[in-house]
Length: 300
Length: 300
Image 1 (cartoon, rainbow over the protein chains, first blue to last red):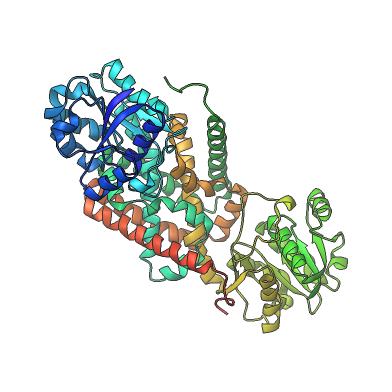
Image 2: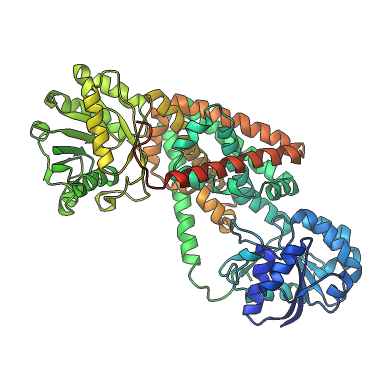
């Protein structure tokens, strides 16, 4: 039971966390903090938060858990602002899509209080945003990756894990570096590739003709290019090193595929396509098996 | 009204065409031809075809319309086999995903009877195949691109267009070369990119870890990598020239994006991402407007 939870950013991610904790009966009072007075008022109206926090000291007073769910570019500023008011016994976590940069920001902002910060990344999202998009079941069956620091106590990590479990999420653990390499490959690179394709087509003189014949395959392939440009600019820069590594590997892969296509090597093309089809099929089968209600948390 | 229609390949594409014509009351009798006796028997059992054709001469006797819906690699062989039996008054069309190679095959196979062949490409598909996948409404609201030859009579083109309109498809016209350039950009290249990404990840030593964290964005981005490797090998080779042109443009785009990422140029990245997001949003809005029931065929 958490008597007091403070949430910075009361949109889809933070608002859904609050709703899920409330539905689970896991929280006494939720304080919302953020830059948009309109969002905070709306979140209060919707019952997502109980109190709109105005004073940092007052908000942090007696807080059990603090979640940072504002845009990641604000992470260091928020941590710096709350650091002087951070009391022993309060655990801070975040929901950022990259972790090495967040850890570096926390080191700078929190100093000696770094041990109270447990970095996290819920793997959930939708194309909508803001308090009205927040739903209690956003995290049901979804993964939350925690990347605990050597400084963290086991009890503080468990406080964060228990809160996410109350949202029916499944807890995984990676190091921050592992996390960033993994998500560069399976999330950040695909976003970059999708944006690049749509931009490439949009800049052609006959773009209108091309878009006229784009169909469902193109629609699915480019869905992630509908995501927020600001957010993905920040993620790209925050995870620059790992993303460059993955992009270079992909460019080498494409260059090899180009040579086979130019040579008319049908057997090689079919080999690559078959390997991809088989790997994807296995992955989908594994997902479908995993989406059965889990008997207990994985990877813990 | 078509008294007799012959369909080579009674799977998703050919079978759905037959079902739609029957539902529209547009066809007397449908003869199915193909390499798989089991598929033909199943198609007959399902009422998709009325007769299983065994003799080419008999099948072509009195046919009004012939649709080639077998794998494109068989196009030339089928056209060569039917050419001696092709009577005046019979119109032949196809459903291949590439058109320049089909036109070249038709020129070789049909010779003086080339005028009777009207190339076409229905822009519809699903991930399932075979006669059991065939449905009467597969083509409702979908585009069918006809790429008529200079040799075709207006009446023969209209015979093919009218059959597709009876399936509630929307008829478009392009030259075979335009068609292949357009689909290289919006369909063939995305398939190649998706296959390349999944193959790239599957070949990494920590592939299992990576796939474990792939989520819905990755799932949509790579959905087309679940397509038939044999079919996409054939399409890649059939449209080699246009596909290489598009792939080279995309490689140049990615190389430019890589330079901006390496330079940490957030404004440039955001510019590319924003342009892509805006273009995709406009495209989706246009699709949604077009999916309203059309008052009449477009582009005719």
